[in-house]
Length: 254
Image (cartoon, rainbow, N blue to C red; front, side, top):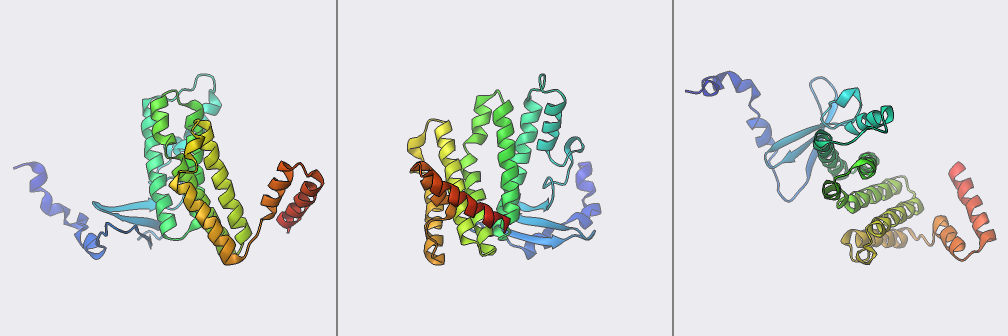
């Protein structure tokens, strides 16, 4: 008999059947919870079909420190900083970047499911920063596109989360501004890849637009100061634009 089978009786303390049974998997729902470990720290758990993912709330979701850095992106930035001329991404880098993308995706989805929107924004920002690093340094265009194609999805999550966080602070105008920024970034993505004609067809774009109009109606918000400023600049009404800038500056200071 295989040695592993003979030692099964010694592994009963590792059995998690009771944990899985107490938290049945539901294929039509995102199941996430925050718990406190025996050591006292808070972690996120996500129920997936084959078990449970457990993620740290700060730094890398898996709790590791690649090369002593908080995240693999931070590690790559340090490598680039110390030898910018000779630094190149290789297959090992691609593999580790893939891991970090996946980990931050799971935690971002978890934060959204928990309505923890500020944390979702932070994790989306990390993913976008990692995408920017890859865009700048990656020579494998096929590998790069395998991630770039998901940029609108990340931008959608970020804009949605930032808008909902603003609503939590009772700032509906800022929520609309955040949605507009997200839509501008998504439009830039399509422009960068000479695919502007697909922007209006994007379901994620339409969902952000719908959310923006819902906020306008529910909170009785007209044109925001930022929108009025953009219109004044486009119309070359520079005195009006200057007044609007002053209003925006005073509001930000307040």
